Length: 132
Image (cartoon, rainbow, N blue to C red):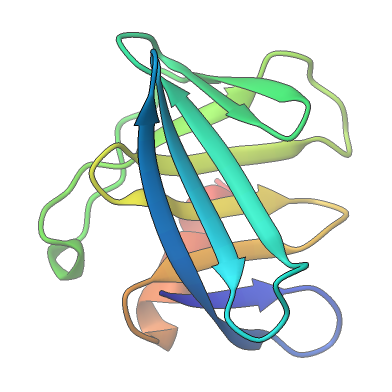
């Protein structure tokens, strides 16, 4: 999976391996950088709820209309926001149970877009939607 990471002056493109496991009432998605395995992102979707667990935070699905795009097989990506709002909080997150993470917005840290293949136009469009 290709990740475009926005943090600093220039965006970086890095490759990640995605592993998926269903464990109990959770769907576990783990993204591990192909070159530097210390760069790992884990996110859990609690089955039959509108809840994601990312880092130490809980995110809930918002009422915002899901994000779709023809280049993403017509999948609908829901917006998730943290329960505890803070100026420097992560979010929103765009997520679909079949695809996993599409995007993580982070005001003071890296914003990451995950696509099957690099697509600058679609990446910018997703960034715009995350910032609405």
